[in-house]
Length: 143
Image 1 (cartoon, rainbow, N blue to C red):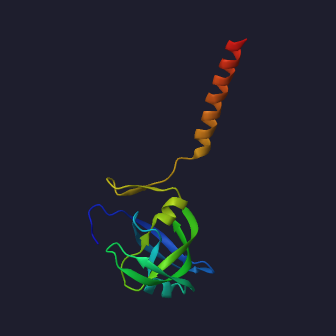
Image 2: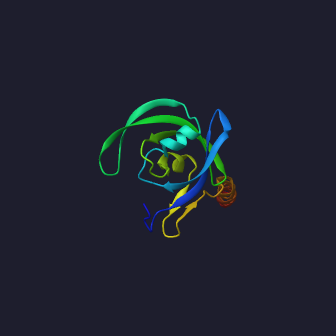
Image 3: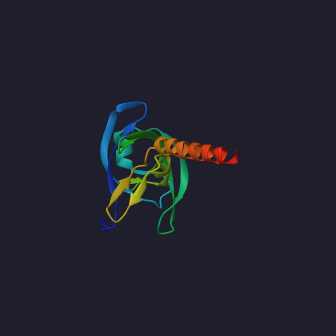
């Protein structure tokens, strides 16, 4: 890999049944990947259980068969269960759109970092206050 626009993030990947079986990985954030991908040697080390297979299309257009497994991923202060493709090659681990969308992360390619969402409840409460004030103004003008 080694692309100068590549965004990487450290994360902890664990066996969901036994989180003591874990390892820290340097994930490549791939917004073109629809699913998270982990190397087969990592899946074996964590003793992940195969949960199925799927045909996956690679960036170069090839379609390959991949095993699938559930894993627990902890990244940027957030943890979640992921359904990951087990790659038989030893390419680096990828975090795909599945995780990015679930955690509502965005990619800042220029600064090579992940942007976490702003807490919505602050924005919502501000909108309620503004809307409520405008409603009071409208109602007072009609009187």
